[in-house]
Image (cartoon, rainbow, N blue to C red; front, side, top):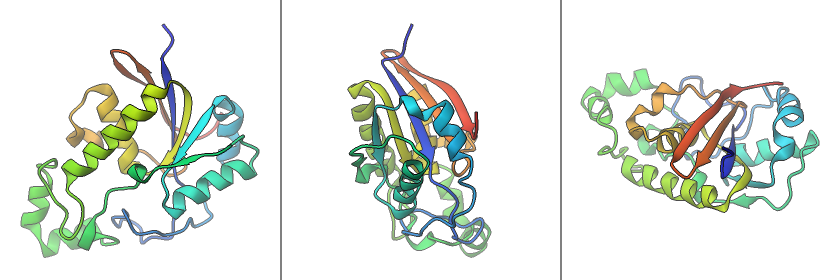
Length: 199
């Protein structure tokens, strides 16, 4: 049975954010590293994409531009603010170890996940709700759709498509500049590929 929608979820390339830091709403550019594999992805997977959606954050837009430069047919992409990464608030660009040392109680509360609100940032429930909304809208349009977005967004989409609790998002290690493929059927989703980097 053919899927009603095939989603090609491309995580943006590496940035110059401090290694191991929480990068959400901060609008940092790409580092220029780690995008060489895009050419292989275009040749084997992305030529079939009919429409593109993209996070408005700079690192995602620059990744989409790299696709164009490598010859991928990208016409009139939809920039959707719902595809932004979660807003970590006061924890933006800080390491997990630093936050855990400074506020272990709040780190423990984060483990409960969907009831958590990042200090000065976004509620996890609001993030999951907006990702569910954009996933539903994109999937209902049908066809072969490319989405350039962020690691947390892709992980959450995988959970929602597969019917898993969103708190399981860390089970999926989505690497920068890698491709995840989801097939969406009327009864749910199938994870077709994870961390595809070349042909």
